Amino acid sequence: MNLQGAGAWHFIILTTFLTLLSACGGGSTDEAPLEIPKVTYHALPTSMSVNEGETVRLTLNLAGEGVDQLKFNWQVSQDIPFTGQGTDTINFTAPNVDQLSTINVQVTLENSSKVIGFSDQRTSVIVANIETLNENNGNMPQSGLPKVDNLNFDGLTSGSTWFNEQVSFTSTINSNGNTITVETRRLNLTYIEAINVSTETITLSECGLTDTYDININEFAADVQCETSSSLNIIQNDNEFRLERMCGDKVVMASTYTKKSDNRSVSHGELNINFSSYENLANTTQVCGIVVTSEVKSYDSNDILSETVKASILRLFTEYQGNPFELQFLLDKHPTNLFAFLTTGFMTDNFAKIYSNVLPEISNLPESDSGTINFDFYNDNKNIKADFDFSLSSADGHQESIEGSLTLLFE
Image (cartoon, rainbow, N blue to C red; front, top):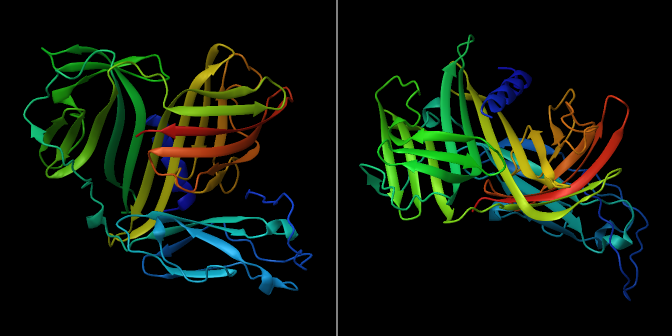
């Protein structure tokens, strides 16, 4: 399976389902300045891939007079122990993982204001387990909540707000005999618009979107094709219910609804944008978001994992000058990675988009020219923070530079 091809196919799936930071210290100090006019070093790679159990060595290969006086501060996510704190080189062992996992690493230089030529460094270490198809066959974790025979509608009031997390799993065999699996996760804020107890149907809408849709509890994901028998699990407690479509004893699609409020909540995020030519979007807390992440894996004829690609869509909805406004990112990474480039080219198909009838020159352009999105070091799948900058060029030659920050919180 060609990685580029898999990535392209992956983006089609998602569509149908829906630089580094420069550091320059400031301030004054009474300490004697370090006698280091300039240092040279090798920048950390954007990312690297290892197998679980391998030794990871990250080094800056520092050179220059007086470098022994410098002290570096390293941070490694997931509380992974490492050696070499304070030096220009660290080592750690890639942990055992159940699925492809990302470790974020960043390093800063103490007293960087007295040193010329060093920028803070960030990298992602992608750890793969020695996985076989049997370990990734759609057996998504089942909920620990109690199963019920029928959904209790008493707590599902019209106008209430719920976080919805939907996860699906598919598996197909391509023309080369490779097995392709796709796991897709969708997060959004959902409103209950109406309930029909007699037909066990709930009418829902999503924060940021105008359409409504119905789910019939007993028909949830009933069109999923199963080689074995298909069944439905209904799971519920006071503030949460979950629907699980089973193929045999495997969960192939699940949708979990967690109550946020008995009333209609209109936000779960923040957004601000600075334009180079237009009025800025001041920091607003009236933001809704939809996040879709997907992971495509290819297994060879021996059912050994051979390729993995990821992708994400982030959609943020708010108002700009009293009109609907959407900011969208399509990425070849998950928001748990440190950063991604926002450009379409040989290596990536990432882009940022704006939808606004107030800004017709830059609305719904097919791609962004350049830029980056830098995710917070402590992001997880349900808590996303990022800074971004990118540029857009319209057909009439107008170029707009855009920068800002976003927050989406799903729990």
